[in-house]
Length: 102
Ligand SMILES: CC(C)(COP(=O)(O)OP(=O)(O)OC[C@H]1O[C@@H](n2cnc3c(N)ncnc32)[C@H](O)[C@@H]1OP(=O)(O)O)[C@@H](O)C(=O)NCCC(=O)NCCS
Image (cartoon, rainbow, N blue to C red; front, side, top):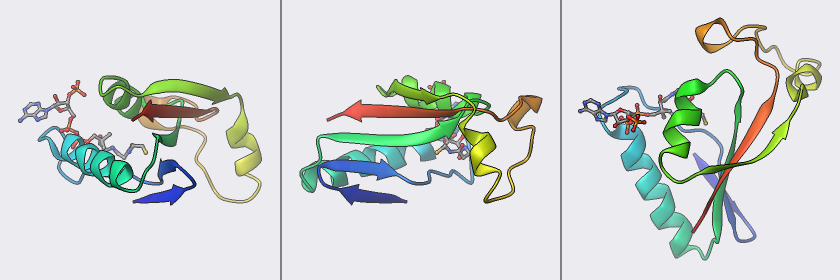
C-alpha cells in the first residue's frame, strides 16, 4: 500500500505472505515504477527498531536511514495497542524513517 503526497511516495505497508521468494523485491520494483510515473522524487516509509528484516531488506535495496525518532512508540501506545516486544524479542521503542531518492 502506498500513497502519493506532493512529490513523495509513502509506503504505508509492505507485506509478503511468502517471504524470501522475491515477492518483496518485486513489490518495491512496482512502487518505484508507479512513483516515477507520478512525478515523485523519493519514496519513504517508517518502520520500527525491532524490524531487522525490514532494515536489512530496504537498505540492501538503496534506502537510507533519514531519521530516527527515539522512543516515539511510547506516545503511540497512548492511542493504540502496540506490544512491548517485537521481532526476535527486541523491545519496540523507536521509529526509523527510510528513504530512497528516485
Ligand atoms: C520485509 C519483507 C516485505 C520482505 O519481503 P520478501 O518477499 O521476503 O522479500 P524478497 O524475497 O524479495 O527478499 C528477501 C530476501 O530473500 C532473498 N531471496 C529472494 N528469493 C530467494 C530464493 N528463491 N531463495 C533464497 N533467497 C531468496 C532475497 O535475496 C532477500 O535477501 P536480502 O534482503 O538479504 O537481499 C517481508 O519480510 C515482510 O513482509 N515482512 C513483514 C512486514 C514488514 O515488516 N514489512 C516492512 C515494514 S513496512
